Amino acid sequence: MADTADVVVVGAGVIGGAVAYYLAREGAKVRILEQEAIGSGASAHATGSISLVGAEFVPGPSFEEALESYRMFPDLVSALEEETGMDLLFQRKPSLRLALDEEEERLIEDLRKWQMELRPTKWIDGDEVRRIEPRLSPNILKAAYEDESSQLDSYRLTLALGRAAEKRGAEMQLRKVTGLITEGGRVRGVETSGGEFHCDTVVLAAGAWCADFGRDLGYTIPVRPLKGERLLLKYEGDPLPVLISSPKRGHMISRLDGLLSVGSTGGRDYDDQSLFLGVEFDRVPTEVARLELLQRAVDVFPVVESAQLVQQLAGSRPLTPDRMPILGPVPGWEGVMLATGHATKGIHLAPITGRVIADYVLRGKTDVPVDMDAFLVSRFDASDSHDYREAGKNVDE
Image (cartoon, rainbow, N blue to C red; front, side, top):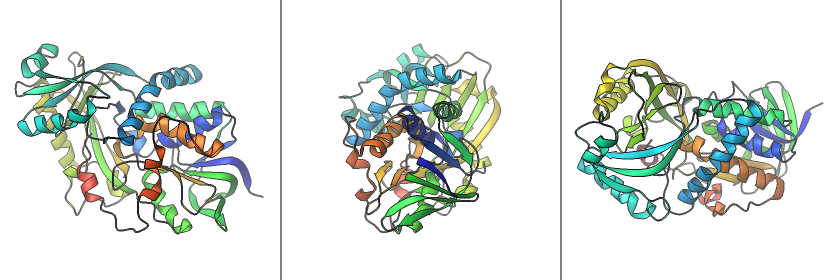
């Protein structure tokens, strides 16, 4: 006889964990199914940056969703640390968006034109940048200064969401989901390598793997894996007093565990032949990326040349053609929800995703102050001919 639950969540990354946590908080009987391990996909190699001043969000619902999720983080972190006893290494600091050349200056100013209303920043010159942090490059022309940004350990967050969900009654099993059980226009459960699970609702939160379930639904789920790599360095000097990013050189963040995070690569760093080779390729760190990231770090923070490489991380991020996540039901189907396509912002958008999907599942609607219709999969046509290359090359973080 098949096991049963109110909701089956497919995927135990940060998105699946957040969905399970918010559902379990409201008393739903939740089963989380994961083919490998908690956080084994994009969540394991994510920067953990929770920032609003980059190019990952666009005007309208995209930025409004990001802002709402940013506001949710302090309370969520506090609750998870209390419930699990884990330290998520959450930090809130000012941030600098650096311009080392005129192109970066233009890219930052283009964003500030519309971001200023909701997230004010101020231009400071290179001398002021170096008063904040004297070790930064003399080549920095200007920077957008933001009073506060945030960062945490993405893997610890993912573990904490899973653990807190379990403490509230959710069950987790390591089983590969091989297909959906359907009846008419309704999804009744999932088939796995260890048997069937029946439920009222299936939430597909498996990142780049969500596209595989389109075959059971007869519907193209427009998400593709995008490779990303970053480095963790051991630098013996004092930590940076600000969180740093730049349009062309990525991020540089002193984590609370003493490591310096540098990265990351995106679609712009791969030629068309290697941009979408698939998740197995994406997990393989490359020497090209290592050298590129080290050079970017030295460009921004020259003293890092003496740092020791501790770890190089690589993996797939789930990318949609417009770089916005897909949240909500699949047209023509009952009993199935999508929660995927967060690209490089799965950590940042996890709280609002968890809440919104829980609202959809339990109440059929959500009252978050954002137009969530903008994130429905129905915004795309039903073809499988979407252009992911331009979206991949515009990934910022």
